Length: 459
Image (cartoon, rainbow, N blue to C red; front, side, top):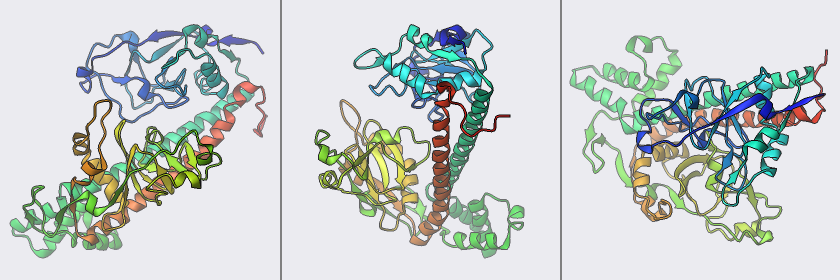
C-alpha cells in the first residue's frame, strides 16, 4: 500500500493575533486553543465573536479543519490536535495559536480527519514536540506524518466513526437543551419570580382566585391559557400544586423585592462549605493504586455539562487522611475557586478535592440542583469577590458571606424533583457517550495499524 504525507495533501494558513477589546462584537467566532478538545475534536462552549479585521484567508466554514501546532502545557494534549468546524458555527476566524488546513488533493476528508485523531498520529506529535515551558510542533514534522491510502475496510471504519461522532454530538446537544431547561426554570422561579409576579398582576386586574392560580400556572409552564386546558389532567394538577406554593405578594429585603415568606441568608449558613488539599505527590503511599477519586479543576475544564463522573487521578486511604474535608459524598456541588474561578459541577461520585475548589455539601433545605444553578446565577458576584495578584481566587470566608435567597422548603422540593430528573437524564447520556467513546477509541488505531478486520462484515 503506498502512502503520502500530510504535506502532500494540505497547505497551512496560520492565524493572527487579535485585539481583546473587539471581542463579543459582531463578526466570526474566534477559534483559538480553547475551541479544540484534548487529542482532537471541536469544543463548543464559551465561543466568542470578534469584530476586528478578519481577512478571508483566516476564515473557516462548516466542515473545514484546523489544528494547533502548539500547547500551553507540557501534556501535549493539544499539540497537533485537529478540529472540524460544526454546522452551527457559520464562520470562524483563526488566531495566532491555530492553523487552517487548505486541501490540495481530493483525499477523503473524513478519513483524513480521523487519521489525525488516531493514537499513532497523536504519538507522532508528542514525540516531535519542542520547547520546555510550552510545546511546539514544526510545520515540517506535522507535514511528515504518513497518510495511507483508504481501502474498503478503512471506509467502513470511517463510516462507523462518523456515526459515533454524530451520536455523541446528538447526546451533547440534548444535554445542552436539558441544562438550559433547568437553568431557565430556576431563573423564572427564583430570580425573576415570574409565577409570583403573574399572581400579583392578575390580582391587581381584579381576577378571581381561579384566574390568579391559572396565571401562575401559565408562568410556570410557559403555556397560554388556551394551551393550558389542552394539557393532560395529571399535568394540570401538578401545575396547580406548584402554583399554590408561590405567594401573591412581594416584600422589601436587602436583596430588593422578594416573594413574601421567603428570607435572605448567607450561603455559608445554608450549605456546608469546605475546601481540599494535595498530599505530597512524591509520596507514593498517597497515590499508588489509589481507590478514591481525587479531583483538580483541570477535571472540570473540558466538561460540557455540570456533572462530574470521573477524575484523572485517584488517591489512597493514607492520602485521603491528609485532606481535612476527606471523601465528599455523591451530589456535592463543586466550584473551582481559582485559575479560573467558576467551573461548576455536581459530583455524581464520592470525591476528594484539591485546594483549587470550594465544595458545597447540601444537607439542609437547598438541594444540589438548586445550589448549582444558584451559583451560576450569582457568578458575577462570586468573581467580584475574588482577589489575587498572580491569579484570581475566592476564599471560603468571602464565599460563605454571599447573600442568598431561601424560598419555602416545599417549593425548593418541587424544583428539585424536576431538576433532579433532568440531571439524571444528563448523567445517563454522559454515561452512554462514555461507552460510545470507548468504542471509538478502540476503532481509531485500526485505521493505521493494518489490522482493520474487527468483526465488520466484509462483503
